[in-house]
Each structure stands twice: as C-alpha cells, then as structure tokens.
Length: 352
Image 1 (cartoon, helix red, strand yellow):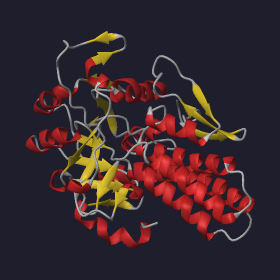
Image 2 (cartoon, one colour; image 1 turned 30 degrees about the horizontal axis):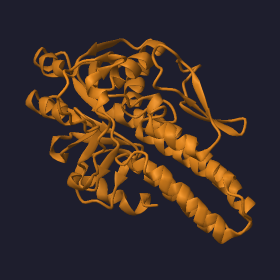
Image 3 (cartoon, one colour; image 1 turned 135 degrees about the vertical axis):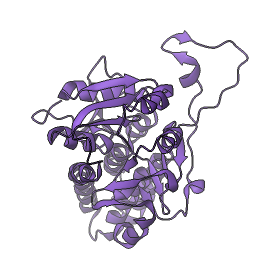
Image 4 (cartoon, one colour; image 1 turned 135 degrees about the horizontal axis):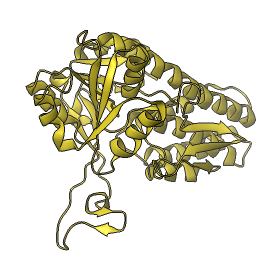
C-alpha cells in the first residue's frame, strides 16, 4: 500500500461488494465478493470486514443488498422487509456504534424518499456510497488534525498503537493510523510501535502489514511490553481508535486499551483516541452503558489447529474494554481535537 496504491477494504464494484478478507492477512491478500445481505452479515460477524467505520460502510451496502432482494413493489411491505434486514445486520457486532449509525442513516433515507420502491433502492445505493466516500475524507481530516495535537518535541516521534485502526478498519487511510500516516508524510514520525493485540492479533497481522506496504518503520511488541517500553522512554505518544464513545468521552476499544491508558498515565505519556464523530453515541451518558461483545473462547485457547490449554479450563473473552475519559488526553476527530468533556457541543450536529 502506498499513496499511489492505497488499500480500500470495502468497494462497490460490478453490482456487488468486494471485501478484503482480513482473516487471511498478512499471508494472503484476497477479496470476497458479497452479493446478498445475509452474506454481508456473516462477513461482519466473522470479521472478514472489521473496524468500526468499515463495519458501518459494509452494513450500509448490506442494507442496499437486502433492499435489492425484496420482491415487492408495495412501499409498506418493502419497508417492513427492510427493517428485518436492518435487525439482522444490527445483531452482528453489538459494540461498534458506526454499525447502528449507518443502518439508521439508511433507514432515514428510506423513509424520506418519496416515490417508488425502485427509487428507494437507488437512494439506498447512493446513500451507502456517500457513507463510504465521506468516511475516506473524514479519515484524512482526522489524520491531519490529529497530527497538530501530537507533542511538539521531539521533532520525530515514536508512537504506540493498539489493534488496527488503519485503512483496513475504515474506508481507507485510517483513524489512529491516519494520524500516523500524516505524521510520516510530514516528517514527524520516527517509528510506530504496534501492540500485537491478543487474542486475534490485529496489531501483529494487520497494522504491521499496512506499515510494511507503505514503508513506515514499525516495531511489533507484545501487549505486556508496553509498560517496559514507556519506562525506557521509547514511546512519546499513544494513539488508538474507538468502536464507541459515550457522551462523557469514555471510549470503548479493543480489549487491552484500558490497561494501556493506565500505563500511559503512570508514565506521563499522552493518550489520544482518534475516531470520527459518528463513533460518539450521544444516547448513552457514560461507558457503563456500552455493550461489550463477548466472542468465541476458541480465540483464547487455540492458535490455528493448535490447542494451547488443558481441558477443564474456563474462559472469558470480552472483545472490548472501556477507557475512562479522565485517562484520555484528547479525542482526535474530523472537526478538531478536544478534551473528552467537550464532545457534547457536537451532539445536535451529528445525531442521525
């Protein structure tokens, strides 16, 4: 991947959706063609497509695919069927608010379109494409605005990130990695440190892959090495993404982010969250209301075909944790960088 050959994880092409199969990276770079809404739901659930903004884009196209499958010209019947498609897609990943935001926007477009069912279908495709294009622009804005908030010294920074909040998790360019890309472009980045991000290893498999494609210097560490690296003064800032942000600024992100924020606070390292404003869920007051997805325990006890643990062990596998607002230095968005407590001023502007 480079500026001349960027990676886009969700593409509308030849009347279907092409998804980069992220379960096969980094060893195989391949696409999955999605023609049906049920297949899109399965792709989201199995993490063929992942990352909050990318999930939202995929769900938007999933809504259009579902609309295309409905065999009726009656508007009321059509909308009833489309609501069922929406519910199927909502049930795939409960934590990522972009999923619900995109589905709500697609339903809003449906109800506001006056005309035939075919006209509604056209509107839905146009809306899904708009969501896709807007997110790509948003990521570039997050990257450039976030860059301005990074520490002024040293001139070349070492940044630590967790999970993958890059091109693969968005329409392209990325949120947290968008900030990294902008820093690299402007000569402000010395090196990216990437947490491996247990248990699915998105940092090891995806973040490092993106950096290698683009020539960005990257060092992989295990999640448990972050404190040691900060004590050795190897990290100047932490930049992570988010799957849902509460109105008070509490932020849910991949499991392990909360402990990373605590470590950063202990070592006086600034901790930034980079996310589009569509990730903010103004309907919930704080992070205690964010639903936390629990995934298959096999992600913990199995690597490939190898079983890592003895029989008789119990497992707990939450996919996300919530970082309290007081541990977040600032939130980087497409409209600027501000303290978590200042989010509410954007509430009316970004409610669907």
